[in-house]
Image 1 (tube, helix red, strand yellow):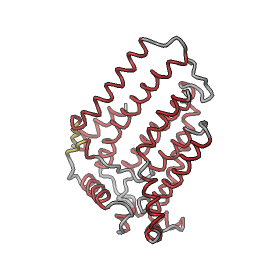
Image 2: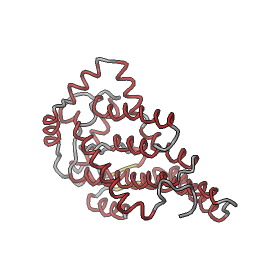
Image 3: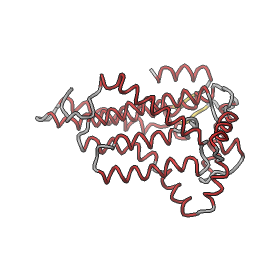
Image 4: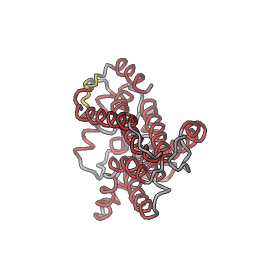
Length: 293
């Protein structure tokens, strides 16, 4: 459904996505799907063995989700809705948080700046951790709950970026965030060109994260921590500690408005509610021991 909606948006915004530019990724998805089909045709003698096949299925679902939604964020911004930065900035003022001054303070503490950049860079690898750890501990319920929350959070976040796009706090407040300049320069250029109708050719290998409100980095960090909550305390503790730094980095490095984190909390509340209301009816309960439902 999301892919179908994205094709309509690309047509409406005259945005052409070059799907062949990421053929290695598509080959990986095809390989995992093939392994899944082979394994379900040759199940193990014990019911618990089929978690291996299901882990491949989960990986395919995970990869296809981002294959569809990563370019869709470009289509959402290309709709050209008015930027809401004045509203987001006013919300930060109401909260009493000045992100520009906070980033300036962080810049004076070199060690803290390095640690925050390191934790922020763990975002993409972290998203893959539940796909590896949860099958190993045979927590089928948490695996599929994690994928449910990923779907809800990223799709709603893209809808928000289409309805209420943001030029990012560092561009609106005109200060340098504490990350490599080449990254923010490319994001800002793509964002402005998309919003102004000057960006029409998208190669998948050149994509950047464009979602600002709510912060999907913060949402992803919380989802990974939530998914691993039943694992060994030391593993969960390490992940939770890293993600405290990651969430703090979104604001302290000058990448997000503080109110973006408020939007993230609301997004997670929505996702948890939808899972309890609908998702748990179709997926295994978290307490499931690995048997077929």
